[in-house]
Length: 372
Image (cartoon, rainbow, N blue to C red; front, top):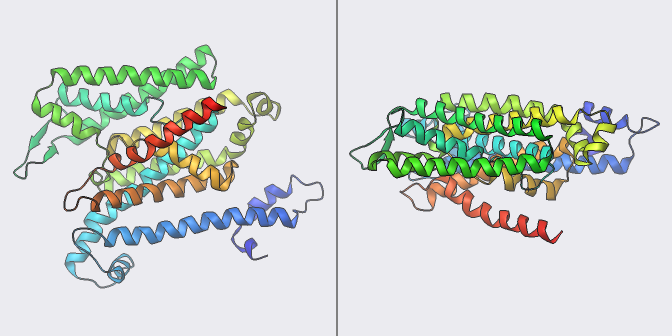
């Protein structure tokens, strides 16, 4: 079988354990092979899109020059600076952020057993926005100054990032704490997240009401999700957190499959549902908080991508998680590239495009849920 060359041996070993004779039927091999092949196709599309994204912009770089620069070949000094100092960090940040938000959304939807579960809908993004606004106005950590080009620059970005991160984790902690007090049911988690989102939104509006013009511009500017903010150091931090959290989600793929069948079924199979739910919720929230703290609010990626991947590849988390990671990176990379080009030479924040894309899908999910 040609598909077997791309399938990990450990995967077939785990699959074969579910058959009495230890032999995997050919039909099942083809079925699994199709899923893995599809994941490989998305990965190849992601790599190709990365090169195309780097080549496009105000200064067009030939495709061959981009490839040559990435593999260490000889290119002009101007192209090398554009590739390695400007476009490559931004493109990789879009991939990592999209992958992190997507895998966090996938885990949350499984943990909560709710198709509307995502970092954005649970109030974590709103908590980060409030933390940034508080830092700008009260702690003077993110006061903005107007430059000669009439742009807004953050004078102390790490203070703003740190405060936003703290409030994001605080929101996740409240959700987990309330769930432990009242029982970790999906409904309680979602309702707690909605309430927190409303609370932090009201707090942000309160701060904005008393802010002066410069502070108000600072708060609004921070809420725009923009991958261009991250340098190589920020990219490294986000990447490390994304890899660690994704590894945990992969390790619990079978547990999430069992939870999808119902809490009682999962408990009957030996899954410690409450513990898996709490730890998964905390890690997904931490991953989202890190991304939002560095890049600003990028909504709906964690909501839309898992549904897109699930519709194509199914609900088996052994394949849904990698498909969501790759699809999330691809989607945000494409959106970020379009945001750079659609109003060139002006750069549109990528969060604007993701909101335009995600809002109709969000409404569709609500309507579909009501019909059911």
